[in-house]
Length: 226
Image 1 (cartoon, rainbow, N blue to C red):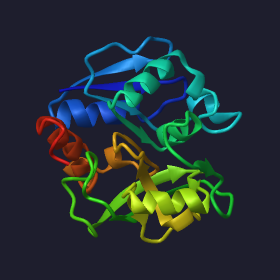
Image 2: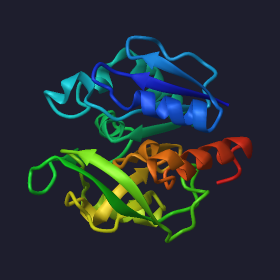
Image 3: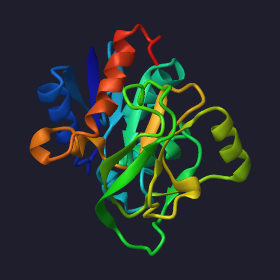
């Protein structure tokens, strides 16, 4: 299978994702510069963490207008798997591919820590290698990770199983303790914590590895394995 990692000016977790997929999981993977058109043939597109365009206006607000995002939107609407991690999550909400928005953390401070996450939905292309209710430890590093959404949309997301991960200790004030969600079609996913930073034994934590293995399992199963 073939993964594509979009690189914006200011991305800084692109290499981490590339390393996990290429060296830890032996997958075909390539970078996609933000000024390029999205080529065909990818099985999954990843928008990595970082500070796209410096996040000077609002996190992800500029990146959503990048040339490559035109193709990402078409790809997502056609059912292709798209993952946004941290800044990538912010870009996906700004692009309208995921509901809600990410705003400043409660306390208005940047948080860099490891936090417990609860797997609230294991029936998805991104969580199928976890057990529902499983608690994992994943690093976070963000200043605008406070997820907000209106009550009606939140109720719909709960009904449709779109909330995939919740915080055990809610470090940023997110509505409903939400850390990761997917769209209604379950092919676009956003996650504020960083699974790519917890995918190698050398780092002392492999809880994030099953996130990427879930995607692989789903793709290997002909998209019937979620």
